[in-house]
Length: 85
Image 1 (cartoon, rainbow, N blue to C red):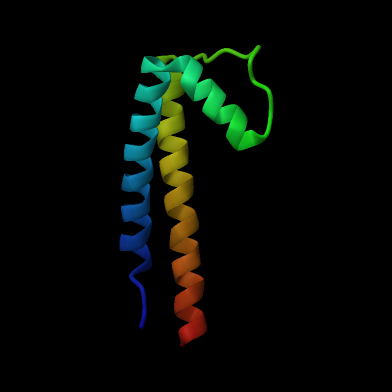
Image 2 (image 1 turned 135 degrees about the vertical axis):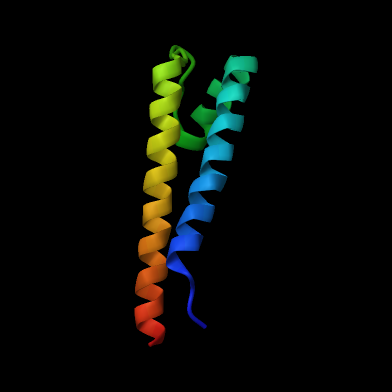
């Protein structure tokens, strides 16, 4: 079965954009809890760190995470399609 690499990449970009927005809202609403969760995910003590979330950073992060994630999944699907012949 072949995958439509373009559609899979676009779908991934959309889902990552939604996740980015949800995560950013959580950082704004619950900064201490999100910092603690980030520390647990990184196996680090981020107690002294602070969040800095501004509109340009939000927009740039949204675009980059969505674009790079979509491109990566597009590439995986393209390679998969070549492997299955």
